[in-house]
Length: 369
Image (tube, rainbow, N blue to C red):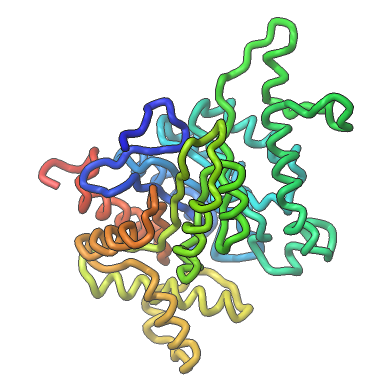
């Protein structure tokens, strides 16, 4: 299917890629580097992604993780909007229960005013952190209520984005600005765009809800691979056409890292996996160097975790990564692949996206590539 150039959801597959390719940036911070270094990498990576024809660039919300500097997606996206011109920018995602819907509507209305027609609002229902940090964010320890209220919070957020609370609603006279209310004010002119809403998930809940509402869906294959196909099947089975979409549209996040040789790819992926071992055992830190990972003495349990984790990371030479991505897309039927490359250094991450673009013959490469 060729995408309508005015379609703010569907992308166009370029080169030999089977579907549009996009970027998920966790703004990772490696040992010996600062958050400023990581954010400079994000700017460089967003520019490369735009030049090479990646469709969209999302930033994920995480908290209390030293190796992940993406606690404030809206702030980072504003920075990236100032350094890019065409690529779609969005949240992958904002964790809705952590925030008042009005605040999110205001933040993303502001982003839309900065980068008209190229802002996505991806929403998740998980906290994006541990329970104690979630309690600090939400000022309550009743965390299940936030997740259980997600459909109501989502409906409220969409009402703020569209400025269409019904008469008699307590929020009828409250408006998210920038937003549609400006077009109804005397002399007002408002952008025709508003950020499309995506639902994100790693299980069936958001898949079903996205289908019922006719919204695009993004699944976190990169950390919930066993649930990918069931969730996508549920989304498609639940889908009801809407004013947003006539047919389902699902992307999956996939961990992938390409290097100039296979051994280097394995070294980089091992370091990222050690970082995950520490995170999952309550010891979050900066992403270690490959040398530290190679010297680390993994327990038998940690070795099992590493093997399981890396089995779902597509890594190797550019041709090996391309083959792995092609196979994943065929198995899942995903409409878009959103690649996240986790590594100790920014240079390795940027190089990986360049190599993947070269492997697929995306535009903007060096002559002869």
